[in-house]
Amino acid sequence: MTRIVARLESPADLVQAAFFIHRLTGAPLLQSRRRLQCGAVVVEFLLFHNDHTVVAQQLRYLIAHAPGFGRLRLYELGDDPATCVDPDDPREIAAATALQLLARFERDLARCVG
Image (tube, rainbow, N blue to C red; front, side, top):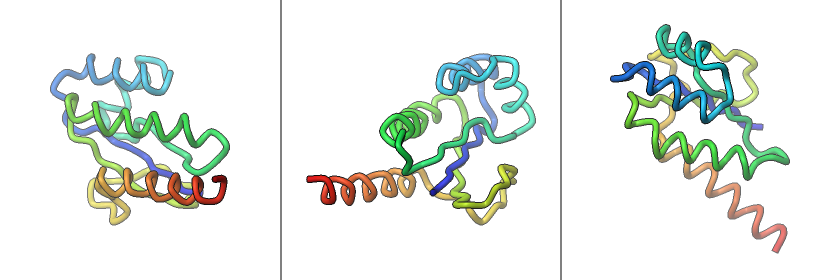
């Protein structure tokens, strides 16, 4: 299992950023806004499970659209149960790295299935 969590820093428009997170996650709008205000994790992705296709699609959507709302920061937590991260957390990964993880898994899965 791989867990990737995301923070969205310094949103230019807090309301629009909260609405974006709300649409992506289904979390209550007020909760999304509070998480953005305090710099908390706004979304968590559990990768490589039965719902991988949906989760991967959500992660790709976040990576593609979040920069329009603020600075996207991703962290690969693996099996670590903690979801708290800070700006200097060494587990931070680039968006390109997250996309490579998805692509590599999907390539390997296609080889096993096909």
